[in-house]
Amino acid sequence: MSRECNHSDPASCTRPSSGRVGALVQQAENLCLERNKRFTELRRVVLELVCSSDQPVGAYQLLDELRDHGRPASPPTIYRALDFLLQQGLVHRLASSNSYIACAHPQWPHAALFLVCRRCGHAREVYTEGIIDAVRTRADEFGFSVERASVEVGGVCSRCGENPDG
Image (cartoon, rainbow, N blue to C red; front, side):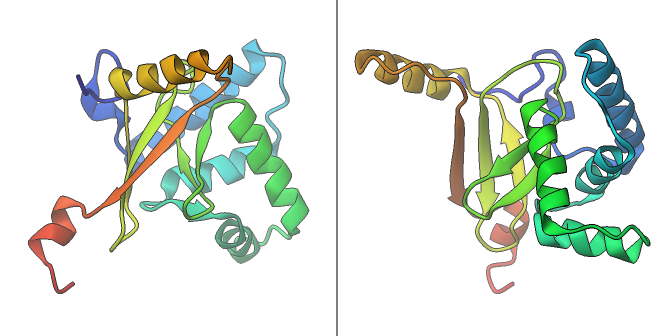
């Protein structure tokens, strides 16, 4: 059975709308406070940039955007900020493109399944219990303890499917 990532509101697991960016950043700040983790200004800005992007975003793209906003930063600095956001479950990393996407539900630890369009690069996070349960079951058979799981499925999104030339 497949359903979106939020257990009560399926539509909210899609990419955050611009109206939700502020709410997600505030939620991240609250979670970091609860967890006794420092949510620095740089981490906040990086999360805002990831949340505001309509596509998964790479570290060097984030670096360019920071510089465009007058915030000098180096690759190690951006990677440290992204590592923190990953560790706190505020963003997900797409291995296939080495890019980052905001997590709409960082308050709930969860495995992630992404549908990634090979044409436009759009990615959508969905929650599918069956696939993740199957991964854990198979891992258990080999005495392997799953700490985190992420599955990426490549294909063509509905927008690109409607415009095959495009």
